Image (cartoon, rainbow, N blue to C red; front, side):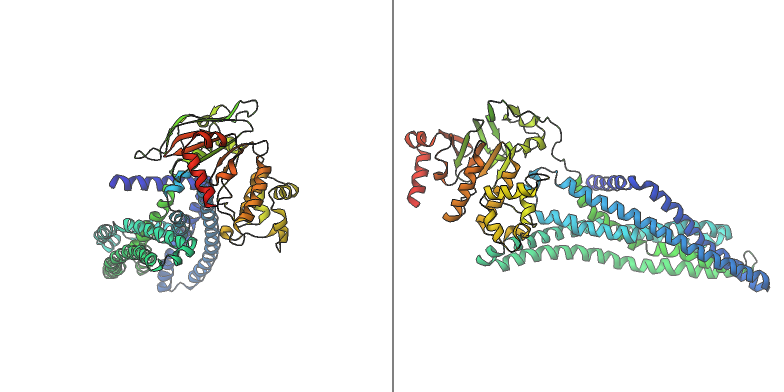
Length: 581
């Protein structure tokens, strides 16, 4: 556990250093101006000392000059403080912007397996709640902490010049108090991280409820989900209260740190004045400066708590930054004059060591040919698509596209050769125009409209109040299933890739919608190399070859006619669907 804690701390400081580095000049300038600003504040103590001593000696002319100097110094200090805040605001704003920018850029480059193995609600919590905690800390607390540290150092130096004896006596009990603070505060970071983890899980459950509200109500599981949610928020509360409990124990230490040095200073300082070791002005100046030592120490527990909370939160985000992204290496191979467009050669694959998903899969599909894959749920159909799209890092399987191994392809170049139409089309909460144009970067309005026409989508789009500028709601709930599918097909059409992967986009539609979709698909597949995951076997009678999968193995293969004549599993499945209709 200790090693893990040190590892996480190192990660956090490494990333903070990385994001500070581009702005090191601005940060260095901020440090310089901050030092000058704090020095001016300490200089006021020097003026107070002289002001008192001159007033006691009744030197009126010198008193007037000193008041003028003090006024000028305060004015200069005001502008320097303004500049200091401006520099820090620029630095912190740029740094936090870079963290957010780097975060999303890194997130979208992670393998799809990460998103399959981690709940989206927890990921969102890291990028919102956790990052906001760190953002608040950076914008408010860091500046104050740094200012107090500088004041502490400068004030201590000047107080030592006034009277080393008085300084030592005034703060002689401080080390004991600091040790106690460290002992009480050592677990704050642990409880803060646990709090954020519970909040992440609670956020995930809220997202589940929103996305599945219809099913929640139909299954009458509102109370069950609420209880699960309460477990997480109570877990967060429990860890928060542990931190509160620590703070309660630390509060008396704050009182001691604030009061005791001042009391000792006044008592012992008065003794030194009586013995002419220091002047009255020096004692008042020393007492004035003492707050710059006392207050940072008194609020050290709060600083520790705030820092550990912020670091505990942002470490959860930086943990994501440590994950390996998809590879960016590989070649962009030529796709012309290749006999086989896609090939699996005795491919074995498993998501875990416990179960083999694909076993000894072999097939080859030539240019312009159509291949269909059928089988029960969990037989490995979707895994074949994922392998073809390069969704798994460091896979040694013998999967070829245009004669080249997937692992040797540049993934961006590979995916540019493939258009995918899913069973359930995902649409972004943007306009219809933008959703279609995402298929091709820089697509013109004419290309978008033509793609929609080929996909049988143009007519229904134009019937909408805002046409192509209609904004699709989250999940595409303001469109029917058939309409969403046609927009997805239009997006595939505009991409104009030589390879098309179809996860039977008509399986969940009514007969009328299926007719529109099938017409569009027939146009899309013309002169393309196509693999179809088929649920409705009536739609694949004319493909060049059909693979029948069972538990990750190819148990039958051939054309529709060959399988109906010689195969058992395919024939039984087809007849079952035929009788059901």
